[in-house]
Length: 149
Image (cartoon, rainbow, N blue to C red; front, side):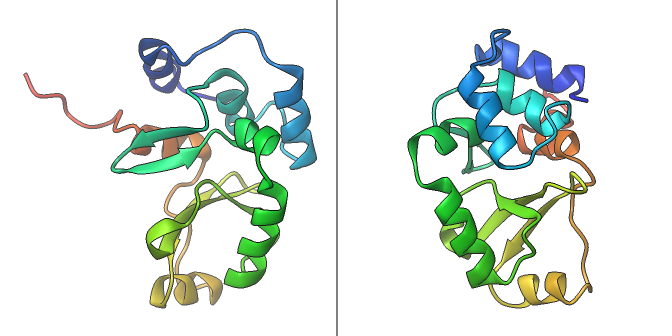
C-alpha cells in the first residue's frame, strides 16, 4: 500500500491520476506484477512522462516504458548480463554502472553497482536496501528528510 506521503507528493507534483489506462494494467500484468501491490498502485496512478527524476537519477515510469520501448528485451539482457534472478526487473537504464532493481516476488528494491556491490548481492552477503517499494519511493523522493524552516 502506498503511503499518504507518496500519494500527496505525486498530487503536489501534478503526477497523480485517478483514471488508470487499460494499457498500463496490461503492461504490469505482462510483468507478473500484482495489481494491488504498492508498485502497481504507483505506476498505475503516477505519471510524469517516461521517467521520474530525484536524487540526481532517473527511474522509469515502467508502464510508459513498457508501452513505448523494448523494455522486456532490455530486462532480459540486464538479468542475463548481470546474473540477476528473473524476479528482479530494472527500474532504470543502469547508467553509470549502477541501477535500481525491483523484486517482483518479494517487493524489495536493491541498488547494485558493477564490481563488489553486485558480487556481494549475488553471493548473499548483502541484502536489498529497501524492504518494499513504498519505502524506496519515500527515500527516492526524499519524503522522510527534514525540511528546512
